[in-house]
Length: 628
Image 1 (spheres, rainbow, N blue to C red):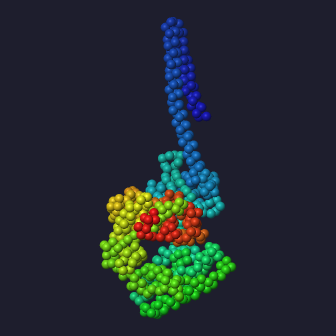
Image 2: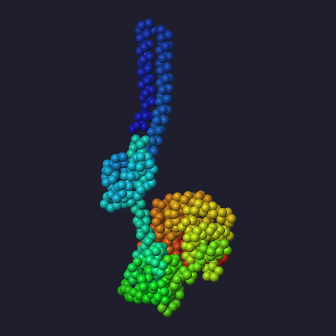
Image 3: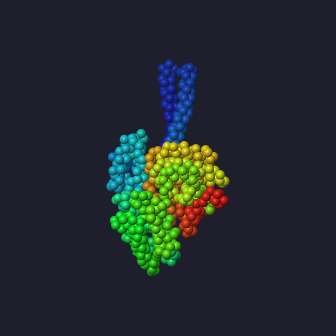
């Protein structure tokens, strides 16, 4: 209607002007004729006047036509923009709302119905705080106050009431619009993050507890071993660590299925928890591996080696009897034995070396008649490499690398290798990282080890055809060192390796050590092409929103989830992490793949990458090159 009116306007105005002006010329000249009489000059003047009027009317028509054409085009553009805006608002899955500074909603997009179940009519004119969870209202008000004051504010996750009286988590951003009269107020954008919050909370639960048994997972068990040792009183307090493997547990799964096997494992975990002395800790270290740590009660051993051995053997026998009692599952009865590796040492010594010694003794325990391997003071026996030896190891190139391939699970192609450091000790053989890295860090030697590993790993990758990537693990404090970026660049320059082929692995906890410096270092390296991976993802404290803000290219699913993938809860977590990686365009690597069923489950879930003993064990450089 408005367009039609605009288009007819030039004609109507021009005709009106022509009629009015012509009438005026005719009347004025007619008066002169009446007064002075008709002459040739009067006729010519009248003709000129009427001709001028006609010309100016045409000119006015042309000018008005052009102006109305421009106005019409501008109006059409505004209408098209308005239609596009309305289409975007209608089709957006996010909620878009306008809220007055007083808190009253004046507009909400139709997507509110899909997310919260309310119609726009039910939502508009309400106080927004009425629909916010009481525990979140203070944060929401704080966000609104900051926006009104012109201060920047990060998105907040806020719970909103749905029409069916449940709560949904929305990530909310807000901005003040005061210049545009049509948008005056606070413009709120909210997107649904309920699923992400659900998975994040599940990860938080299992970051300290095994989801199946409720025992501590490996990382938290290691923390617990340290805590038990710190709780000791006096230099003679003795720490005991037991690692256990359940015999024939796979046969249980084969007979009664995974669900039946889970029932058996949960009952064994409950029994171990009950039998462990007060103040001790228990954990699940692998699919069929349990552990316990505690202090010997006063007088049980007294610090005398023979008495310690007797006390530990007595406790191990009690564990074996308790766990070996029949367990009913799916109308079947199972009596399972366990092999036990045990270590006892002074509590003030290195507690994690006691755990390594206990685990290391499992192989021997399985062939001994009493199924028990016991090491007394493993630190004094096997771990004398203090400062001087570590310095020698670095100076004399005793630190070597083995490499574990990473595979594309869908094609079987090797896409990269993870570099793992070992100490080729002149008298004790090849030592795993647990035997020396903790002490190296405590004595300030970790930076030298990191430089050595970077040099070896980049030289190896540069020598391998096919452009595979090499991953190097960083220690807890490496990322916060200002020198790290320079050390990485120097290793790349010496080796000639393309920076894109180097991936640095860090744990979630490493991101919490001097986070500002760590983030600055990451951005500097990322700008040069070096990529980053978060190792053991799900066992730390990262949130998805935090992860999105980091220059990270890969997440590695912790092996404890992968090993337990036949458990529905662990499977759901693994699936969610795979989906997360795909959503935020990160590589996802499943660690700890040790059997065909686990590999098949990961392939079924669409996991892109994986590593583990089933695919390939860590091997020396030459063996890896031959395999490639």
